[in-house]
Length: 222
Image 1: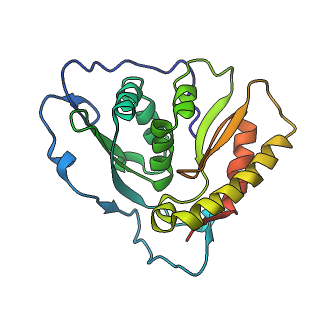
Image 2 (image 1 turned 90 degrees about the vertical axis):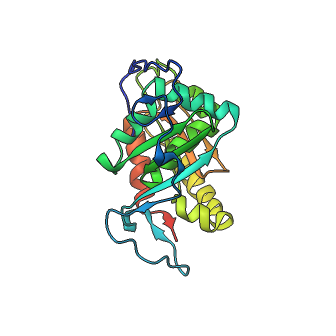
């Protein structure tokens, strides 16, 4: 769970440099030109296409994915870097020191090395205007916020139809869990991103923890 204490924003000078890799550079980085790299923390098993595993059964892996951005998405990435939000997500993730981002401002390309879950979190914030506006708010009224993956990124990539149907089912169940919670703080909200398969939630830490526990036993990865 990513629950930064607000305000957390520390401005990162951009100047005239165009390439970000934990810091801004004037010259392109060789890493930006590399293709996709899969870096498993343990040997990744061959995918099974006959059953769907729960999130708790998945094996932790670190993967690399690259995304070409439109103008608005690139501007959001630049802002998220300046406010240290992407770095905060990666620092709080399961990949540890293996996680990183490379952002080429000229080519409008973002490369992320992280767990599938953290890649989905970042993609949601960059792609979803409502999630971006919520995540970049400095005052959340004491609540926590997260873009919660409802299925594994590789499941969405390999079989988007089936994966997004399961994500929708998981969202419906998660929606019921949050609606029936005993703790109902003012200002909480949540919604489903049916293109990526995530659920952006602004709620109490207690309710988010309950949602995470539910997802550990829900269909997640094929």
